Length: 239
Image (cartoon, rainbow, N blue to C red; front, side, top):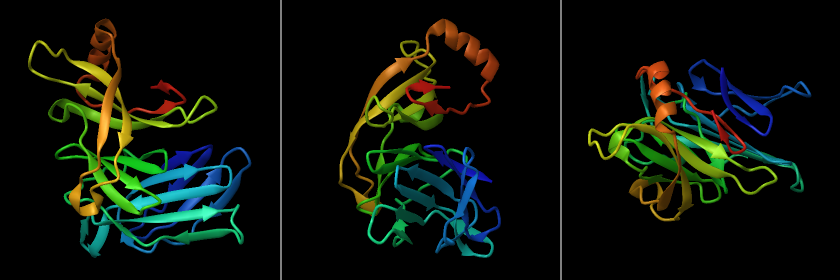
C-alpha cells in the first residue's frame, strides 16, 4: 500500500504482518527499488521518507509485533542510504525507542524538516520528533492540545525559496465564545535536543501563521460535517 512520498519518490509498504519491505518508485522514470527487509516485525507501522539528491532516509515506526496476536508502539527502524559516500552505503540503523504511551496512526504519515521527522500521537495529542543523527525520539506539546480536532502535520517550503518547515493544521473547537471555531495553521519555530525516548522533553515554540476566515470556515464546516479531514502540502500551499 502507498505509505509515504518525498521529492518525487513514492514509498509502498508490504501489507503482510512481519518484517516489512519498502518499495521505492519514481513514477516519472518508472524505476523501482526495494529496500532490504526491515529488522523488526510489525503490523501496520507509520512510515516517513526523506529523499535528497544523493540520499534517502526511511523510517518505519510503531505497531511492533510482540506476539502473533498483539502489537505495541515500542520502536522505530531507520534506513539510511547515501550514494555520495565512498563506497556508497545503505543500511538499517539500530532501532530507536519511541516515547512512552505513543499512539500512532499510519494514515497520518510523517513530515520531515532540518534532519528530523515529525508525526502525531493521539490520546492525548502530542507531536513526536525523531532526530535522525542522534537516533532519538522526543515529544513536543501541540498548541491548544485539548481543543484540537483532526490535527495533521505537513511539510512547508523546502524548495528554492528556503528550508522546509513543519506546520500543524487542525480544527479548533472551544466552548468559550471568545475562541471561535476555526481551522488554524501553526509552524514550529525550533526544537530542542533534550528529552530522549523516555523523557518526552523536546522543546518547541509554535506560532500561528494562518486562520481560516469565518465565512470560509462556515462553508467548510457544512461540507466537512464533523467527519474529520485530511491535509496535504506542496511548497507553501496547504489543501
